[in-house]
Structures are given as structure tokens and as C-alpha cells.
Length: 236
Figure (cartoon, rainbow, N blue to C red):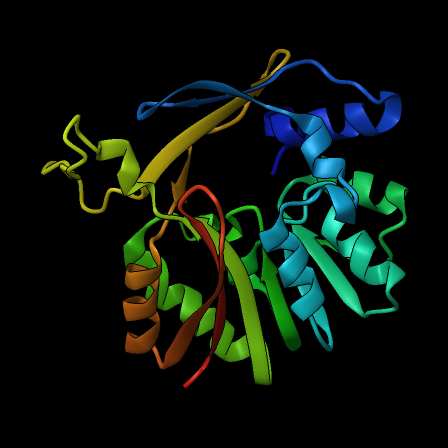
């Protein structure tokens, strides 16, 4: 990724240097314009939601932290003496993680990754990088290569069907989309505007079906307070 197209990375770098940053704006045709609070990416364990704490406590062996951002999850596991590698496609995020003391950091696209890991962490809706349901087979094919025997993927996501709930409490899903959890986002920070990117919110039932078709099992190990859940993915 070009640093001039890396709004999130620049925001993370600024916040790490000064403890504050300008507004990191998030745009989507399906959602109201939003601002990402940068401090969320620098949280300690006690400030994380229960789903994330549960995932960190379940991590074992050699860990891969996918889309690690500012490295908050990697740092916690590292402090526990675990072997953790953080990856992110953002060069400025990678530089920031190194500055914060994450020992093993790679500027890397998950879908071109090599190596073997016992735990793959995909937190803060990290499985959203799959982008589209049709890319699920490619995602599981990657796991075929990088997940150690007996390994696990710990990921959280949300069932956003509630966005289509009418006044009577009935879900009326749109007819003009392939899957209601497929969205696109653009980020802007100061005068840096990133390229649009696809993002996936996947409900547990759909994730389970996609996994089974590719030889994997999905177990929902915890549920949050707002249609979110933590899943553990293992080989069948």
C-alpha cells in the first residue's frame, strides 16, 4: 500500500506520536458517515470488550495477528510470553507497531501469506478482509496452508440483519444485493483519502455453511451485546 493512500496508518502513526489525531472519517453508501476513535486501537486488555478478551485468553502456540493495526492484541500476547507475529497491509501501521515494541511485524496481505500458525487471530471484525462471500473458498484455502494441525482461527463478526428491521420487528432483507453483509468503505484522514475497499459482516450460520463446504467447523464460543459473536474455526 502506498503511504499516500494510507489514511488509517497515518492516523495511527499520529496518535502514537502525540496521543491525539485528526478525525479518521469512514464513508459507506449503506451507513451514515462515521469517525473511528483512534484510542480504541491502543487499548489495554481491561478496556477491551469481552469477546476480544476471550479470544486472547484462548490463543495458543504460535499466533498470527491479522490486520493488527496499532498492535494492541499482539502486545498483550507478547507480554504473556507468546510467539506472536503481527501482519497488516498498512506500511505506517507496521512502522508504528515496531515503534511500540511488537517484535515480529510484517507488511503482508493475508491472502499471500506463508508459514505455519497454531492460532490465527482476526479480531475487530477481522474476517471482514474476505470482502465478499464468493471469496470464502479462497480464505479457507489459505488456512489449508498456514494453519498447523490442530490449529484454530479466532474471529469475531456481526449479523447486521438488524439494520433491515421494520417497525414491526420483521427483517426485510433487500432484493438487490447478493448478501446483506457485503459492504464497501472508504477512509479519509486530513487530506489523505484511501481507495474504496470491500468489507464483510458475516452471520454465524452463513459462516458455518461456508466453512463446512471447505472442510472446516465453526463453533460460536461467545456472543456480544449487539449481534456480534466470537467464532472458533477448526478443521473437520
